[in-house]
Each structure stands twice: as C-alpha cells, then as structure tokens.
Length: 239
Image 1 (cartoon, helix red, strand yellow):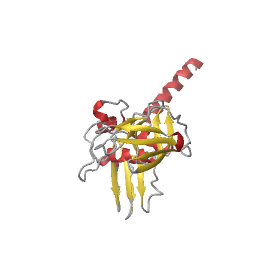
Image 2: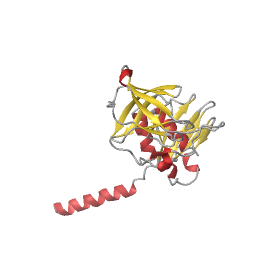
Image 3: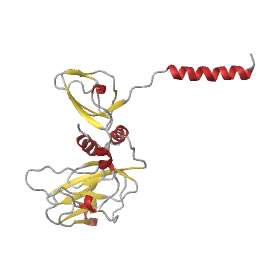
C-alpha cells in the first residue's frame, strides 16, 4: 500500500472516530453553594445538563445554566436538563451592556416605600458595596447609588490618601456619577468611596475581554474574586 493511500486511510479513520465520539453534555456553573454537600459542589464547579445532582437536607445550590440561574434545595436528586428550553439571554444582555444612556442615568430608582432597588448593570460600581470589582478595560468608571431622591456628593480616594480625594456629584434623580479619572486606578490597591451616610472599600480587576456567555462570565468573576458581581449576576438571572 502506498504512503499516500495510507495517509488518506488514516485521515478517514480519524474522522470516523470523531463521528463516533459522543458530544459532551452542556454544562452549568455553580455560582452559590452551602450546606453539607458544598464541598462536593463548590462554587465554580461545572455540572453537565444530564448529570445527577444529589443534595442532602440543608443543602442549597445555585447553578447558572443556559443564561438563567436555578436554585436547588435538598434533600433530593435533580437534573438540569429536566427544565425548559434555552433562555434568549435578554436579561444577561441588559445586565452586561456597556453602553450608557440617559434612561440608565435616571430611571425609576427612587428610594421610596419598601421597594428594593437593585443595581441594573454589572459594570456600575455600587457606592455602598465593598469588595473586588471586575471592570472592562479601559471603560470609564461609573458609580451607582440606590437612593436618587436628592442630590448627593461622594468622595473617591486611594486608601490612606483621603486628603487627595476627588468628589463625584450625583444630581437629583440621577443614579450614575462618572469618575473623571483624577485618581489613577491600579490593580491590587484599595479605594474608599464615602458619602450619603455610607462608606465602602473596593479594589479593581481590569478585564481585557468580557465573555458573552453567561457561564464563562460567571467563571471569570469567580476566578478574579469578584463576588459582589457574581451575587448580582445570580440574582438578576434567577428563574
């Protein structure tokens, strides 16, 4: 048999092997886990759509799959594929949009009654939340506040250098204040945001690429310790 014919047969055999290999089941990502089985299903773990999930009494597991999050509570056995079709991801698109608009700046976000106001965008920095924040590089920093009833001013400074703080103004009815870049942000440093009766300490991770897929985005947030945004993503995409 000639070498050319042997090579062709080898290529054909490789394609045949690929055709016979079953495709891996789509996977969900664990975004919250508590209870006796949390070590079995830690945050960041991948779970196939047809994999059996066995939970014990006291277990609570939240899985992001197909653009939505599901919360499973034990005891019981669950399979992700047993629930509906793939989401159209409109909620994810709205949450991760990097375009600012006049509607986004104002919106119906007055802090009246007992209404709970939620940060509507993953890339807005909540002035009242401490933690590590993942941001797209080099997008401008947009600070967000829940109570828009009155005008307010917040100071933004590097920890230990409060004397060099800059002020970020929030006009009445507006939820966004734009950080003007007077303080150069660096990864690994802590920054203090204070005003409106609250104070928060934040640090930043600048992402060069933002995943479009919800599961990949969740893994990116987990890997970089951006738990505030992971919680925000989990709540916004809940079924």
